[in-house]
Image 1 (cartoon, helix red, strand yellow):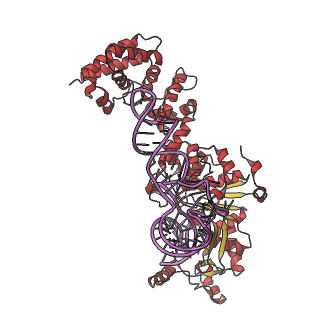
Image 2 (cartoon, chains in turn brown, yellow; image 1 turned 120 degrees about the vertical axis):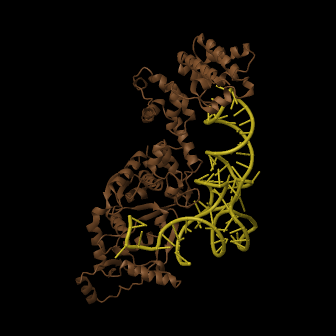
Image 3 (cartoon, chains in turn red, purple; image 1 turned 180 degrees about the vertical axis):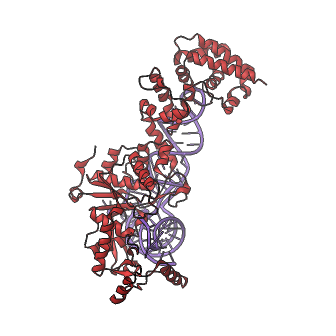
Length: 502
RNA sequence: GUCCCCAUCGUCUAGCCUGGCCUAGGACACCACCCUUUCAAGGUGGCGACACGGGUUCGAAUCCCGUUGGGGACGCCA
């Protein structure tokens, strides 16, 4: 439950409104997912509104497919939005109107410098060892000349005239931050084709949507002073800003595709649980203190504050994610797992009607899943490990054969192993009831009567049952597989060994 | 290069604002042991950090300055 009772009055009366504003030029990156998550946490914490805005002003790179996958990623993480998705491109007229207004008020000006022209000048300055900043070549153009060039159809952009003031704000994560007037240049607001640039569209929309808190990645830190100046010029009080530290790869550089999986849906496909990824992402740069790590969403909402967010970038440690995921898997009821792994089973050709709810083997199947749970780190582990329970069609792993079926001198060679398998088969055939306790007692007394170690029976039994050297407790496997099939597998392994003898 | 940001175990972090309770706590990973038929899980223990240098102070991981190191941004991309 969201702890609204503890919401500070100041925050509530402000009517918190935040937004997540991805550009639809690719998948939902885990960094973007975390930005969305922090916005969501903040909105829920303060009973505010979470707005989703798709920044699709770059018509060349924006795709419908990308919008779809971003929404899909958010939905999977259960990051729900209260408004939107709004599409930024639809605000074109409003963006243009703001630029024109600034132009009319003398806070912006027409710029006829083409991009190649500017590139040339920039390179010249940099070659001379200087630092480039737009040289305001078009700032003082006579009105008549502007008219004439416009009339000639010469393309022109609208540039903001930086007012020569420093821009400072109290960042909710970083604290007081400021940029000197000298480094703030005259940014383009409207391109010569009439389309708005990022900073214009972003500010215009944040004003329009009455955003109170802009929570975004550190990579936007240097956009913030430009935007603050724009708010001022527009006569609107800027929102609060909170800049999140970036998610880093193991080389401490900004996480990107070369570091491996970076999209939210990739983690879904690898078998991570949304709750686990959500929890993990929340802990990247944020800590509720008290050593609390595995938390429910509601606990996170109740504990969340921007002030507790770290200022340092955080390395994405997939091992820890895997661990958290295994913790979440352990909390899953078997029925939930059963539903989740249907696609995996189907792909492996193991899906049968009798395993489903109401089916003859449903209860039994849930027991199998329960037994496999402690060993699973990701969801596909279940289908892999469930195979020997569901079908006789599995192979003996070479390592298991080598280790437990005669390769080790202690076993006394293959003939001895075959003899044990046959003896075990006969012993198990008469065990009543066929329970973990009774089968284990039977095996141990057999071993004792032959003066041999129980392990010499247990390991081959495991290989006979699942084909591997690793499995859940062998007697629970034995009972789950059932007497009839188990005896068959012991015969099969004995025959296999006899056939492959020296 | 310029500007901005950052700096506690290998990694995520607690502590820092409001100096002493810190011989710096927890988690992941790693190692050992216990449990045990295997692998896990679980339990116990271990390894392991305040980047450096100056201040301020009776006292600094905590405050100040500098150095070094790292990152980000410098587009008519977003």
